[in-house]
Image (cartoon, rainbow, N blue to C red):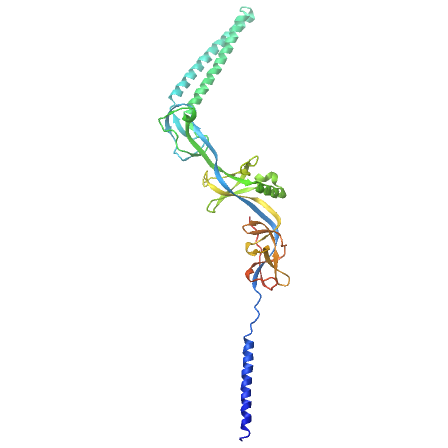
Amino acid sequence: MTAIEPRRRPTLLGIALACQIFGAAGGAQAQAPRAAPPPQVTVVEVKAGKVPLSFEYAARVEASREVQVRAQVGGILLKRDFVEGALVKAGDTLFEIDPKRYEAELVKARAQLQQAQAQLAQASRDAERYTRLAATGSGTDKARDDALSAKELAAAAVSIAEADVNLAELNLGYTKVKAPISGVTSLEQVPEGSLIGITGDAGLLTKITQRDPVYVIFSASENEIAQARTLLEAQGVWDRAGEVLKVQVVFGDGQVYPQTGTIDFASAGLDAETGTLRLRAVVANPKGLLLPGQFVRAVVSGFYLDNTIVVPHVAVSQGAQGQFVYTVDSAGKAELRPIELGRELPSGWIVKSGLKPGDKLITEGIIKVHPGAPVTVSMKPAETAKP
């Protein structure tokens, strides 16, 4: 028994050591790192199509018409028939000037007309009588001619008297000063009881500003005009630009005015100091939301490009060599694509070169992407570019 015991101990120790070695090896194998899965990305298929464009300008609102209301006859201003700053309609009576003097002048003119008509009637009878006498030989030719001349003079006097009546009626009508256009009145220039003249500022009574429609005035640079002409000629509508182009007004807080306008005027040439072309749009303003003197933004739309690719802003990255995007190739790997960008739109960038229809563009998950590395794709419908 004593000879066998020493051999059994080493055998049990070896077994224990073997278990520790294999256990450690197994633990090391369990802690070995696993390969990371391909990153999840969102992909949109690149498409080319019709892309609307617009140009935006700083603009100012002007009244379409502003007229001075002046007295056409002198006299004492008796009454003001409107509220200052209120909206008046064309033909409304605004002021009344003392009419007594002009009523008297009208009565006098009518009396003179009656006198001239009576003289004409007498001259007509004399001319008829002397003409008969001359025809029978009882009267002279001179007497007949004198009678005919007297008749003609009397007819001329009637015409003068009729004109005097018309003038007197006109002056009497001018004692009621009426609104020449519809619009908003300014402050009264002369108070009631004042003596009104008709020369210089003595006859200025108020001003009327027409605010419906209004004008929106803006200026475009020479380069922008050239771009616009190129686009419209490519669309075949350059000769109908005023009908095709629409003007949207945007307030300073970003709100969009609900009515669009049309361009109705362009200056004959560029301004020598600014190098810009002055343009004017007519915009309906029934609720008076646009105020003369107000600064707004004018967005001119109606332009578009055919067969054009637009990529979202989030898909474009900037590198040392310029802008680039990531696409997914046929093997499911990310591919870096340098691109040349054109004009920026609210929905993205116009791509001049570097992409073609059918390319799969990565729009989300770009930060996890490496060139040549595989990716897991999630497709997303393409969005239509907006101006």
